[in-house]
Structures are given as structure tokens and as C-alpha cells.
Image 1 (tube, one colour):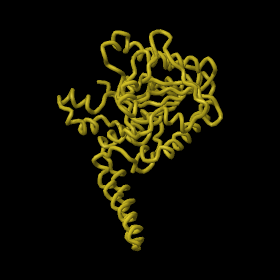
Image 2: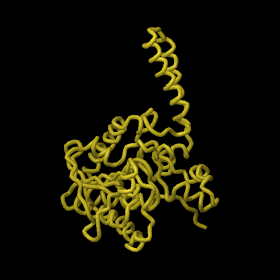
Image 3: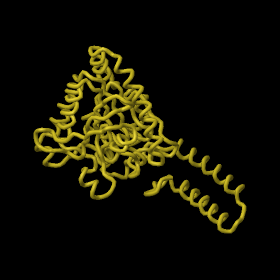
Image 4: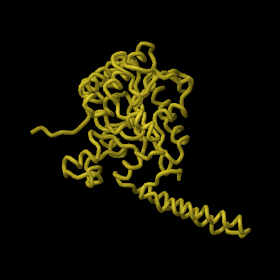
Length: 320
């Protein structure tokens, strides 16, 4: 288990890990052989970890997706890409630190990578606005998408946001228009687009850069038109009903692959990406490289047609 905050359902694991650690220290300090007892506890730990993480509720998975030690966009860029050159500004108003992007090399080939970036400490969280982009963030993203198209470079999008920023200034500068325009223009981009939800995928803030030829989710991420807390506030007028809302909304990766909203679920390390970021990054890279290799072979007309059809057939409804 990684250092830092512990979620409630993780406590039994942490307590048993501490017990094993204390027993090892005692064995060394007192020169007492406790190998048998330690091995027994380690087997018990593995069984406990498997039981807990294979039976998480949707709300627990939402909590896991928000773990403060979970890898963010720039962490994945650092771990799976090289030669990253960050590009700034929307050429209209300002740069938005909540939305990051630039050229990089993935497995020796150029890509344009764009995604939301959260902060670790208080200073970074305020600087990144908790990963909530302003209109200039979406306009910057669209500028980078067009730049990628100009140089015939595939686009990689990493989504991790609690939503687009809902402040007055953002609304005055055209938040809804910026998101809508970006969504519309993404359907016309003549280069492959791969989208991965790496943490939170909330509302239009996520969908604003969420149009892709392949859409993937990490195992313990979530993706929905509204957060469980937002849904609970509307339906029950009480955030305490967020666990019920998460169940009703079907927000987690297993739900969305069944509903054919996403294409692939990327497995995480047994206790979540925050416990072994490097291994999580390797799993992301494997799926990403495979998807891009497949998409690069498609003619542009076929790429655009399949992208449009992918979104036109989503959803189920009854005609009366």
C-alpha cells in the first residue's frame, strides 16, 4: 500500500501490512525466527487484498479514482513517453494550467498528447484549478488538435477531471460554446484519436475532449454525465446519497464497456494505480501503442466515418 491517505475500505489491508512489518522488525531486533508466521500473514494479506478489490462497490471505485496518490496526466507522460514539449495558450485569451498538452514520442513515434492535470499539494491544486478547465483550456486543446492534424500526428487524450470549471468568469467567456465547438471539431480531425479515462471523467468537462476512435478506461476510473454527488444533490437534495447515485448511474468501467460507451478496460495493479504507478503506466502504454498501430492503418475516410458512427449508435431508447 502506498504512503499517504487511506480510504476506509483499505484500512484492514493497511493494518495487516503494519502487523507484518512490525513482526519483521521484531524478528530482526530480537534475533527470533518468525518466518513461518510472517509467510502465513503474507498469504492472509494477499487473500484479503483480492477479496476487497474484487468486490468494490461503484462508490468505492469512484473514491479510488480520486486517490491523491493516483498518477495524473503528466505522470503518465513522463513514464510512457519521451521528448515531451509542452505547448501553451489558446491564442485568444490565456493559458490554462488545468489543460496540458504538447508533442511527445511514444514508442519512437510522434504523438500529440492532451489532458487535464490536477495538483498534488495545495499550491499545485490551486494553480491547476483542481483539474477543472476554463474555456481557454478547451480552446487550447482544439488548437493543439488542429496542430496535430497539420503535421499528421495521432492524438492521445488523457481524461481526469471533476468537470469543467463552472465559475462566472468561465461562463462569461463561453464555457459551453468552447466545449461544444471542441466536440464538433474533433469529429472532423483527419488523424487517429485515442482517449483514455485515467481517473475521473465527469460531465461535459470530460466529454469536451472525449471524442475518439478508441475510448478506454482504467479499471478503477469512472465516466458519467454527472458526478454521483451532483446527482444525489439533484434527486435527494443530499450528498449523502452519492453511493446510491453511483449505483444508479452505472459510472464504472465494467458498466460502460457493457453499455458500449467505451471500447476497452485497462487493468490496474491489484490495489489500484496509486500503489504501483509504473506498472499501471506499462499497462496503459501497451493498450495505447496497440490501438494507435491499428488506427494508423485505416484510410482517412474510413477513420472519420467509423468515428461518427461510433457515437451515433450509442445509447438505448424506446419509441412510443
